[in-house]
Length: 275
Image 1 (cartoon, rainbow, N blue to C red):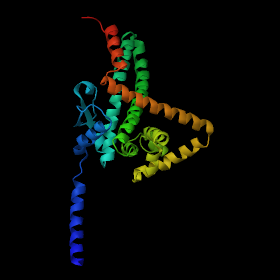
Image 2: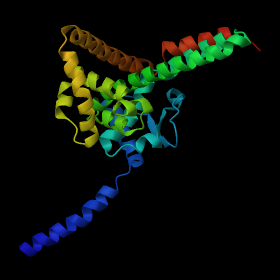
Image 3: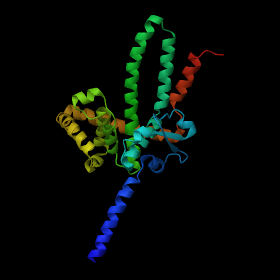
Image 4: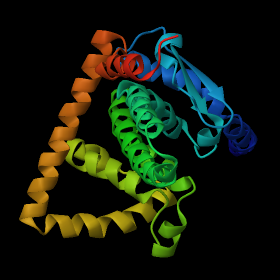
């Protein structure tokens, strides 16, 4: 009996590392993506494609193919974390970040085309600042839309925080001793704290998440100590959840078409000269 047990243990030791080494993030994208699509009753025609560099989903509505960055996947270590990367891209499409960006760019192009040479440089500098703020806002929208998709798909949404804090952060965050991408990570944590408290209570067992909690807990305690701040927080989080539900319902009803696309076509017809 003892001999049999030792043989079984030795076999397990040999097999376990081999199984662990077989997990490849890129290989999990299609399976994880299909689970998220099915669980959220999204079109079954949606497919996922891993690409090098930055994902470009500007044509995803027409191609039904969602690009997922291999760079982003390099910061994942399990299916929950892959689910965040996939859901973030899908969340950005549902939130229609592409449509918003098209309208913004059309407006900026119309503005700069009517400026004098003296004003173009200062306008470009201001435009870069505004664009960075807009991109940050779009990422947050995609993050929490993705969080809803993850939860419906049965994945741990705290994985989103973990992936973000694994990714490179800013020099300013390093100087302040904050986790990488702390603002986006906190945005997800706040959303979960109010709308899905059981998910936060369940936790996520890794050093990155524990390090994030060391940063987040004092912020939460300070907010909870003020009735005014807490009431404002609750009101904002309730509104965010309602907006996400409406966005998802609208996406399903229209197949991805939105007022932003209509606005873009209208702006294009006004600002572009006829041939």
